[in-house]
Amino acid sequence: MRTLENLLTFLKAPYRAESYSNLKVGDLLYLLVITLIVVIPYAFILEWAGMDQFDHKLMEILEKNKWLVAVLAIFFAPILEEPVYRLHLDLKKSSILWSLGLSLLLINSVWYPLALFWIYLIYLYVKVNQGQTPNLKFVVYFSSAMFALVHMANFTDFDYGKYFYWVPLLVAAQFVIGLVLSYIRLNHGMKWAIIFHAVYNAVLIIPAIYFYEPEKYL
Image (cartoon, rainbow, N blue to C red):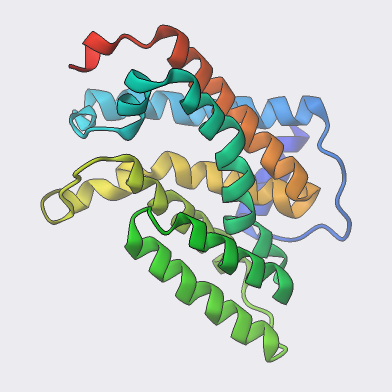
């Protein structure tokens, strides 16, 4: 329960720990369960609401190479996405520049959240360079929103003009995950954020690989 209390306290008023501590296995699993309790029912609600009508790139890749999905989701995505979206949360100039530079590797994704993310990082850098401290709550929530929006790249041929109102609902789960990862990053360090991200993806992806039925999505 203390882990949940700490998480809720952080979400109300984000803070950075004076020194990072290792994330205990029990706490990692507890945070994982909390996240899944929110995300999995939400996924069923989306399907019930008919949002499975939007083609997902994951289905296409699963048809071609199931284990490529595992490698990309469990190893590549956390190692790239965490430094991009969470490294700069410590508001150090070097961290902001690293996040900005690494974000260029995501340039094949949906362009508009990336462009907005670059403007945001440049704004942070200018503020920090001037000796000002950006509002950490804004930083945590905005970076989580950008992390969520970039996952719209998972949907193929999505008509933003026609279905723009679905966007917040389609990426709400990623927004929640982004907040949890921000808590871990600012209290336990980047290493544990990457590990948690990898474990979370593994829990979702590996069952999908084993139980995937191509004919269901035809």
